[in-house]
Image 1 (tube, helix red, strand yellow):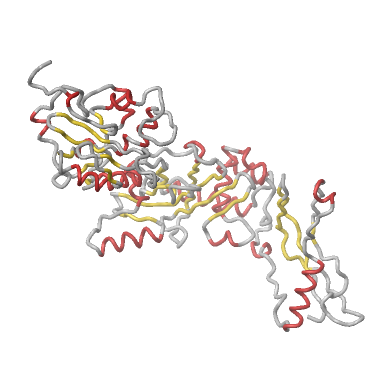
Image 2: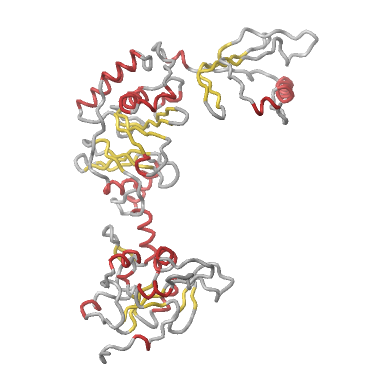
Length: 484
């Protein structure tokens, strides 16, 4: 043994402090983890996730060591991890408190915070953590400094942080996400990305262009955040959606629309002549500007739920629901429901943007339209005929009349607690029209109550959801007392 290098076995290390990653693996190889109270196999994934991920690296003499948190039973009332000081056997509950305490004995190595155990195992390199009996050179020792004198740099961007916790939070928020970003307008720099990183990935539009010098997000909270940041002296602050744009792949245009497929839709009764003309005009206007009129997004390609298909549709105008002259159209493949952000969706007929999305879907994925292949009710070209009838049933009624109506509905129209056997075991055919069976007014008192007026159609687009299917296009009729 070389006399210039001290012998590592003379240094008392303790069960939570190790000299390199190999010693950590060998201490738990083929048996339960020695750092956990519960019986857990000490695999490489477990050691990385529960222990080595939050390791604190430090220098003791000429050796680089690290201490990992443990879940041992020395503190029974504590259900979280804790830290053991190998110098004085003190136990601390927080990482920052342990780092402050450890600086009294040794020197913290900040540049080793982001070491990944799995990468070290695969590469078997010793560039980051030293092995036994290998002292560091003077040039390498100069790069390490206490926490208070050196900041921690993010390996993905140029951001710097003073604590390891802030760095991990930064990586989780901005670099650990796998949400895709699509460029839908190459001329104006408009992108399509998910609004939330959890749950359903509903995309939104953002604009970040160096040519037009516009940086904006269509989410009101994000715009308010950037406005407040500018007032606070940070005019370059961006929301999380705009920060994703830097990782967006190059623009790849989708399949272009063809008028032949739109004419086939018209022949099958899926679109009216007026809507077909409007779709062609909208597509031609986008083509003149060199912009893609329809950009589809299928999230199942990225491992997310494939129930919804989203489309970025060119509108050609700036509105509250299309700040960047584009709007979002969604299609539910399970129930065949279409939705658009424009105000026309509140009515019973489909808007131009939905038909633009249907045009592309019919051309490229015709199988997805099988559940909603019936023609729309706007084939007449007059959308006002398809609006629901507004009823004023309770207008002008007195209190005793409303009480009588409520009691009648409670006693005669509610679903019974015990359903008949045939209703619970057999599926009944859904009628094409629902109409009240009463012939006389049940609310008016007297031995001879007045009759009811002729039925009035409330809607022609009602839906009934069965366990196995969905029935659409049903009629709902309403009867009114002749005295009301």
